[in-house]
Image (spheres, rainbow, N blue to C red):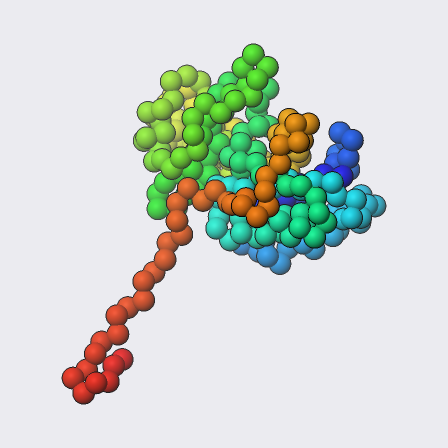
Length: 233
């Protein structure tokens, strides 16, 4: 049985599959509650499918980019399962997972996640000649910089795309196709992992790391003011 886990952003998703058949899946808006909601949801999903976690043959996890807390929880959960059950693990890009559901459109697909500080995490993908491929690396950009990269009609998707849809339409006109905001499904992780499953191309759980694209913002502590009498505050 395959267990797929995505907790990259405010949306989380889980899926179970066996022999090419999806046994159960769920997606929900969890905000920043990944640490308290992910495992209970997995337990309920296993009960719904009437299977045991011990039936797991591989864990597939969305590895980012995304929120620092969400990725930490998802990767920790996936690695914990892989180690405790002695099963392999595969990490898949969260942006690629977001883009993949639009693969059959034939158009370039640009998933967009909020990267904070007025910037976005993006990449371009396209299925052409029956081959799904990444056209550009995952990177941080502004809306202006992204617009300069687009040369043809492109589908823009992701839970943040609605926030910048008007900007994209203004800059790109008919080249911007805005996909409806729908929650991601971890089933896409399973579909993307199939070539690697068939090839036995697994990640090392000890070295698999989340993709953040940027370091977390850390506020430096204020310097303590020294007094002439040797005290401080």
